[in-house]
Image 1 (cartoon, one colour):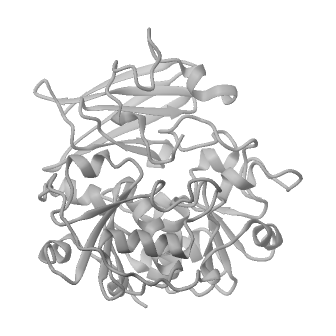
Image 2 (cartoon, helix red, strand yellow):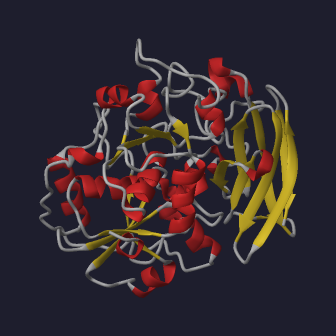
Length: 114
Length: 280
C-alpha cells in the first residue's frame, strides 16, 4: 500500500478496498490488529462535499492524520482505539468539528454536515 | 538560502501561470487528483511511477531522471514550481529529489494543493503540451541523502528526527492513521531519535509556520542541537523530505540529510536496535 493513497478517495460501497458485505478492520490492519476505523461522509444541505479535508486530532489538538474528501464526501482513518476529534475544512472557510470515540476492532461511522 | 528563495505563495504562482520560464508541477502518487483538476498549465509527476525504480527499491538513476524531465518538457534553465496534496509531502520529496540531481531553480508552493483548493482558486482538467527537451542532470548529491549504515552509525551521535506521528513513534501504529497498517516488520523508533511530527511545522491550511516558530519548535521545544548534523526520517521518506525542507531550506541548517529508506527499511532490518515508547 502506498503512502499517498488515502482510502477516503474510495467511494463507499464501490467494492474497491472494502470487501463485499462491509469493511473489515482486521483485514485492513492485518496482524497489527489493535486499530479501529473511523469513517464517514461530509455533506452540505444534503449534497456531498467533495472538495475539502478531514483531519483527525488527538488530545490537545495533536494532529494525527488528514485525508482529502472523496467524490462522495467520504473519508476513512485507521486509528488506535480512543477518543479523537474530527475536524473538517472546506472552501469558503467552512469547517466543522466533532468528538469521536473509536473502539477496538470496530468501524465508527461519523456523518458531518457543514 | 532564505524562505523567499525556495517558497512562494499562491498569488505568486497564479501570476506565473503560462509563464514560459516557469514549469508548474503537481506531484502526487494518486494522480487522480491531478486528472480531476490542477493549477492551469501544471504538468504532473507521479511520485512512484516516475521517480522510483520499477524493480529495485531506489530512485530512478541519473539517466532516468534526465529522461523523465526531457519527456515532460522541463529544461535545465526552467524554474520548477512544485506543489501537491498531503500538505506538500510528495512535492517536498520531489523538491529534495530535484536538488539531489542538481536542479537549482526549484520552488515549493506554500500550502500546496490544499491551500489552493481552500482558497477556491481555479483548477482545470486541461493537460498542457510541452515540447520535449534535452535535460542534463548532475550526479546525485550524497550530502542530502542518508543510507541505512550511516543512520545506524548516527545513533547517539547526530540529531535523529523522527517526523512520524506520536503513535507511530511509540510503536502503537505502523503507518499514518489514514492508511492500512502494514509494511515494516517491527514498530518503534531509532534509539536517540526525537519525535517532531512533520505536522508541527505546518499550519492548518498546509502552509509552513514562520521561521521563528520553526526555530523555536526544533531548537527549543524538541531540543535539537543545531550544532550537530541531522538526519530526518519517517516511514518512506516523504514526510521527512517535508522536514528536510524546513531545516535545510527554510532555516538554512547545513548538513541535514533525508533518510528515504526510513521506517519501512529500518523497521525490517535484522539486528538493529529499536526503542518503543516515548523518547528517552
